[in-house]
Amino acid sequence: MSTYMAKKGNIERKWYVIDAAGKPLGKTAAAAAVLLRGKHKPEFTPNADCGDYVIVINAEKAVLTGKKLEQKLYRRHSGWIGGLKEVKYRLLMQDRPELAVQLAVKGMLPKNTLSNKFLTRLRVYRGETHDHAAQKPETWAN
Image (tube, rainbow, N blue to C red):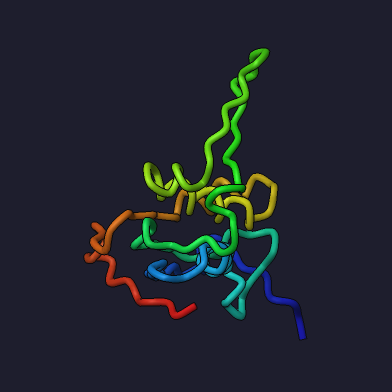
């Protein structure tokens, strides 16, 4: 028996919708990362991009447990001296919940060149509506 290796032409990509309303942000991001990598498929290959498209809706209704809303910080640095910017997740979830979900998913993907390809297939929306009805996405129960 030979080992199966996924090739670029043999990969079938599906579209999945994950509803983040009332669910912890980390659980939603973990489910999205699994789908983006393709780990739910039997033909998963670690060094190949064999994942699916993921649509996350209701990003503003995702829940952060414990004291994370007040204690967790989103940090970025401009590269200049004194260029560290910090934003509490309470403000980030109010202003840009799409970014919070995208950062959570990015943190759960491998740190290599494939992760940029995975993130191009992630779509995050604040409300319940999305623009991808033509792709006939399936709901993913996480």
